[in-house]
Length: 377
Image 1 (spheres, helix red, strand yellow):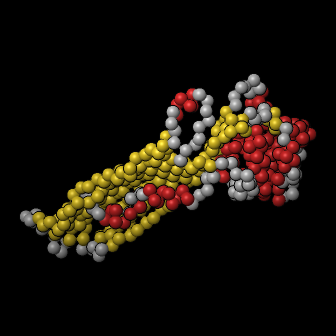
Image 2 (image 1 turned 30 degrees about the horizontal axis):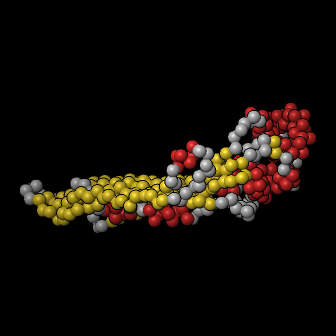
Image 3 (image 1 turned 90 degrees about the vertical axis):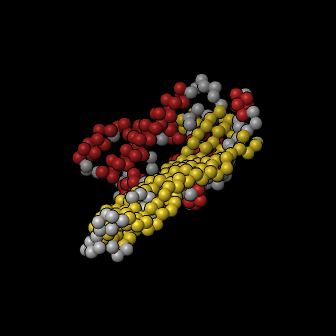
C-alpha cells in the first residue's frame, strides 16, 4: 500500500479592526486603534493509504483490507460591533465591525484537530467490531432456540385476550410490559428472521458486510460576563458534539440460514441471562466466536466520526448610569473528524453498559416479582 493525503491547511480570514471616537459636535474623529484581526478560518487535512490496482482487484472479487484513514475539516467566523456614548462628555466610542471582544470571550469558536481527537480518545469504539461480526453470523434464524421456546410461544397466543384486557384495565402493568418486551416483541423478531431465512434459502451470496455502533450527543452551555466600568454583556456559548462510534466487518462467510448452535441456545435459556448481557455481552461474544468459525477470511476496522458545532451570541448588554449605546456579537464554527483504525474481532467478551429507559422498566417489572405467562426470562 502507498500513503496518500494532503498537508494540513489553515487558511485564515483577516480583516481590519478600527476603534475610534467622535467628539460632541461630530467635528473631529480620533482613531484609538487600527490593525488586523483574524475573523475566520478554513482548515483541514486527510491521510490514508492507496491500495494498488484497487478497482481491478475489487472487480475480481478480492477481499480488500480496511485501511487507516483520517480526515479533519473546520470552518469558523465571528463578528461584532461596539457603540457607547459617554453622557458627561458627549463623546461616542465606536467599533463598527470585528470587535475583538467576541473571540476573546468565546475562544471555543476556534476548533482544532487536537480538540476533536481528544474527544474521540475518550470513547472506545473497538468493541463494536465484535457486534458487527455477531450481526453477520446471526443474520439467519435461530431454529434451536425457537424450538426450545416453542411452548412459551404457544402460551402467548392463548393468553392474548387476557393480556389485552390487563393492558386496557391497567390491572397488572408490570406483567403486561414484560409480556410485550420478552414475549410478543421477541416472537415478532423470530417471524421476521424466518421470513428472511426463507427468502435467502437459494441465495449464493458468500460475502457479507456489517456495521454496528452508537451515537452520543453532548451539549454544553458556557456563559461569560464582561464589565469594563462603563458597559457589560454576557457571551453565551453553546458547544454541541455528536460522537459516532462504529465497528465494521467484511467477511467471506456462509452463515447458516437456520442456526442450530447449542452454546447460544444454552445461554439464551439461562434465567435472566439477558440482564448479564446488559453489562457483559456474552450472547454477542458467542455469536462473534461462531462467526470466526464459519468465516474463511475477513477484514475489520473501528472508527469515529466527531462533529462539533459552536455558536456564541452576545446577550444581556447593559450600560452604567452615565452611558448608553449598543453592543452586538456572534461567532459560528463547525468541524468534523473522521478516524478509521484497522482491527480484528476480539476473542474476549465485551464489557459495556447497555442500559436504556425500556430496560430500566424491565428491571422494575422484574423486581415486582411478577412472571407473566409466555415470557422468555
